[in-house]
Image (cartoon, rainbow, N blue to C red; front, side, top):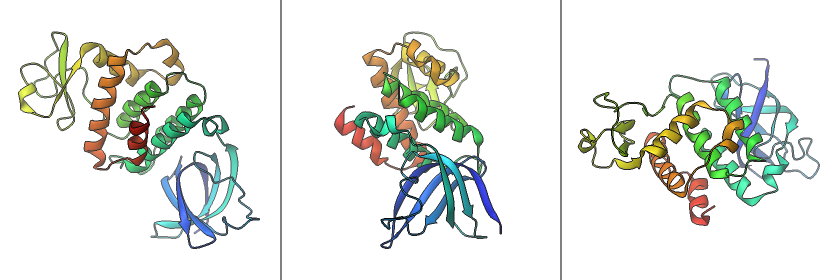
Length: 251
């Protein structure tokens, strides 16, 4: 099997023995790829610091047939996102973005260029955006759509009626919003203001360059964080450590 070449972002790593590491990448052509970087923990490793978390570059890896673990042959660094790593809050949120990608199984897709470019663009924007939590919410809702889990935000998820009134309810289990007549179908559904609902719908559509134009209130931030975190937990069936860390720090 020849060496494969692709663009890649480092989304996770952990030690393997004394001298090696297993690196988890998200790639353009192959989706998630796990590969061993041999000798990376040696003082004079040829990889240097090129395989740190968030780093984006051109990956060459030897693909072992019918195996889940491959071998890193080369990684040409393109962007190390130093501006993200230099700031504590931005680093924390960057860890959350890559952990979310790592934890989520794509519905019916082995690889998706759109997911790679969304993550790349989010990390680039994270280096400069002022409202970091709003960027995280925009990434969450757009990533969920690409992964096949887009919430229904335009009509009631059960009866398909349009919404009336100032409040609706969000059901992670049913996959979207419930109208007042249907809210009783899920006792765990959380009420959410129409303003927060409209903000989520806008974040689904616009690219991150529009984020400075959005003004999210404290209520918007609380409601979006609550409903999206619960929605993500329901579909990933995992507790994301980076999100817990952010919650404990209240950043």
